[in-house]
Length: 95
Length: 437
Image (cartoon, rainbow over all chains, first blue to last red; front, side, top):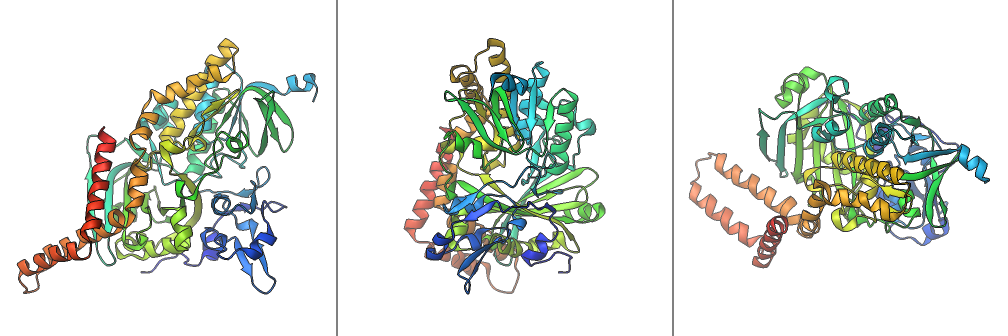
């Protein structure tokens, strides 16, 4: 059926309003990420914040896309998770 | 910090978080003539909030008796629908009560929460948006204030209404770390459609709205449900699925939502729509067994922060508002007696215990764990069987009916071992007796 609803997550996130914080509020312990097999954060995050870069052997964190749900910190103990600074981060207008 | 400064920045009560629980607590305190500041980390109240969702009129009325006059209500829920999905069919049970069409209403949180705070300010609540509370200040084990990005503030009581992730409850060690099985991850899309099209598609008129709970099919036996709610000129569609299941089955939540949206029973509702917003939030699922210690010296915990949600009935906003009100009343009593110890604040717990909130949560304390142990049965297999039955019942194809019903019955027992059926029956009995005992 026809509609104007993007299927791709990046295009969905394009519709979300943010006031981007100057510093990252999600800090995984990269040495633990190296040993982590499942990397579940890359799957369950509803904003696709976490991606594992195989060549650099590093977890990239696109914190500016974060919807602040907190799911990642519950499935992984190695993410230092705090809220963005005052007034910063996601700004839901229609939810 | 010197005593002098602490006195300058001191107020009767600080409420952290301007959601339904926080605003209800704050307005109750202001109405009692005490000084209260409502602190919110977002740029406006509601900007961090997402829910299914509906707000229940009984709770809204208790806090805002005349809310119907000017609150930003999208539509009252006049039509309740339960959709059992299989891969390529659906069965809908629809309930409408023409004498009681205003029991619940749909609102958009960015508008509703903001309106609530504006009302609270009219009644004397001090409001501090864009203020992130970094931690609570403790003195001799008692909560005495908050540390924000900018300054420290002091109060006789701090009411913790900072939502499901409550970092403050965690700081006080009032609750253990939440386990993934005790929360659902909710994702939702708000899809713009003209009001007339919504009315036609959902069979609605004027301010009447519809709620749909979606079971089975694309949810692939995960422990969770989908939902659709009609706004004025948009439709909210989403799902809430156990974080544990998403983790174990390695499913991306937005891909699951895509599958749900493309099911023929659902796709027809959002055809030609335009995405307004995508959002995500955690939903407390642990119920009675996961409620933290609700108070300590100088502090009380309300709403989602206290895990006060009844998932079976989609009740959360009403628990939030009424728990906030109880905490507000308790704070007034404590200020009257100049006693902010746990001894005094346990009145809050008593109020919750004597109300529908803890009574209902206690009644349902085992429901989620029983259901989640039989997810595939109750949320996948039986819904698909219902669809299969109606498939046979409604199909005329020149074949005799008896043979089809015999096959249906045989398959029912063949595809489900007796042991499995027995476990389902036991779970069913547990549910009924668990609730009625």
